Image 1: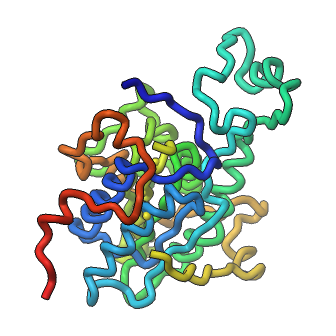
Image 2: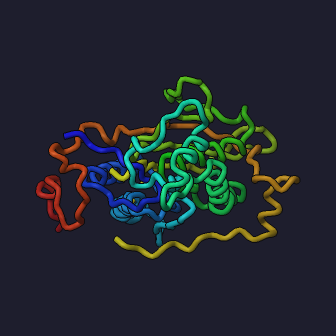
Image 3: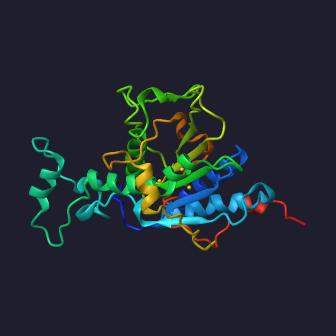
Length: 314
C-alpha cells in the first residue's frame, strides 16, 4: 500500500505507532551513550513533545545520574516552518512551474484560492531560531557552568533545525569549527551550512568549548547540544510534566553579550566540533509495520511486543 506524503509544518499531527517506536529507540540510545541533559527543549507540537517525553522518561530511570527537577521546556518558537495554504495537503499540491521562483510560483497558482495563506518565509524561521539561541543557549555557553558540563537536548523539526544550525554556525569563527573523527557531510557541496536532510529522530551532536585566553586552546568545560528532528507527521527528542521555568536574559546581559552593532551574540571565543550528523544507528533493525499499521496514530494504552518480554521490577 502506497503512503500519501502530507505537508505537515505547524499542523499538530499525532505521533504514529512507528514514530513512537523511533522515539523510544532514540531515548534509550541517548541514555546508553551517556547523554545527561541539563535542559530539554521541545517544540510544542505533539510529535516533537512526545519524543521529548520519551527522552525524559528514559532519563528519569537513571535516578542519581540525572539532575533533580529535569523537565521539558515547550516553546512555540521551535515549531516547524508554517507551510500556510499547503498544510495538510499532499506534496503534489505544490505547483511545479520551474520558470518562476518558488514563492512567486505558489502565489500566482493559489493566491485566489479560498483561505490562501502564504508559506512562512525563511527569514521569519531564522528570526525564531536565532531568538531561541539568544535566550536559551548562548547565555549558558558564555557564562559557563562550573559544577558540570551543560548538556542541552533540543527536539524540533527538519526545516527549523536546519535553520537553527545555520544561525548557530554564523556565530563562530570559520577556523574554530571542525568535523569530529569519522563525520562526513553528504550534501554534495562540501560546505557546513547545509548538512542535508534530517531523518525522523536523526540527530546532530555538537561539542562546544570556550577558548582559554592564555593558550587559545579549547577547555574541557564546554557544552554539548543534541538536536533531534521530527520532520513529518508520520521528525534531537519526546507523561505530562510541568514546564521547566525558562531562563530569561535581562536587557543588561543581552546588551553585554551582543556585538557592538546590536547583532547576534558571537561565539568567536569558542570552538565547535560536529560529532554526529543525522545519526540514526538507534533505528537499525526497526521496520515499519506493513498494511498501514505503522502509520496509524499511536495509542498510549497500546502495548508493544517488547513490553511482554520485559522483566517486572521487584
